[in-house]
Image 1 (cartoon, rainbow, N blue to C red):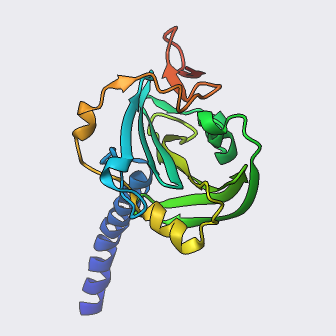
Image 2 (image 1 turned 180 degrees about the vertical axis):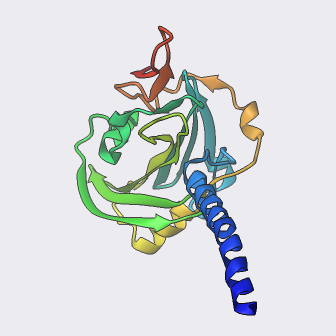
Length: 228
């Protein structure tokens, strides 16, 4: 009789356990697609002092751009955080790091020679990098696309962190130096970006195509995606 009671209890609990496991799985899946917060770009590196670093906010529709540039001696860096609005995603055109690299004004027409690739796991997630050079500069670019949209049937991303570092003396950055640099890039809760005025940043960053695709419903029918 006791064994029967145990079996009955097991049968009662099993559906509950299945539902609970399902909810946990759903929650974990949702976290992968949920917007990533906080979303304010920060950067620090032993290569640069505080007064070597400049922040600029770009004027853009359907999202925002936060730039950090830094220069000290032969070292210089440029970082951008591209963040689409709730019903926008990053345009498919910019899901390739070398294409995105050409959006930087300094590099748009430069004769770039590419080298080794790799990635570093950071607090933001995986950031890929690739060595490149031009003229007397030894550089590496870095790129990460993340923050999957809940509004997009294709689960495309809403955010990019990307940029490059160059040493104009021709010194090649090693793996440890690249890792240290990339770990200095963070997203934080700082609200100090509210005091950085939006301005024309085309002297620094000039995409040849629109950065965002917007979900619209112009006729009351199915939603469609269009580039803006």
